Length: 160
Image (cartoon, rainbow, N blue to C red; front, side, top):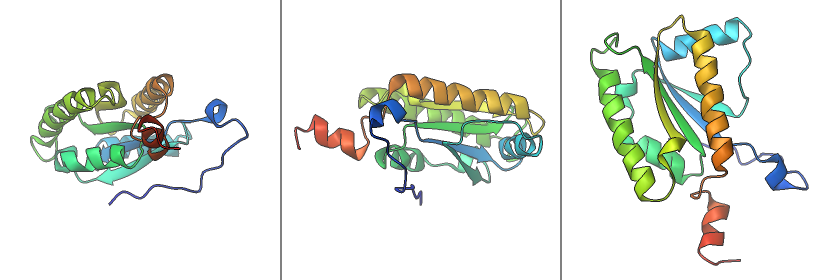
């Protein structure tokens, strides 16, 4: 399913060098195209964001998002077509509903709803894609590492 790099460099002061790990689930027709256009235009966005190409945001199951958080991802951006412009008719509306429910769950378990965000983009909105990616990175950076990261779970459970 979702594989995470464990080969990250660690400095002498890990807290000072910590950067959030973000996944951006992008729909094929709009958000992924916007990300591709951003790359073609050489627009810069944080390198700690991994894009997952999906056919439609409506096909992203709640389990995929929760699994990513459980594996230590610090934040997730779900990026779909503009509302009313979904190529799968109502996929982005379904994703909006799922995202809202997952945000409630994240608050209930103490992770924080702010770590998950959904945006709607058209294929031509490369600057907006870059802005939204930067926003989620800054939001998650301010929140700090996910409490579900394996190292944080051991500390909170009182383990060495």
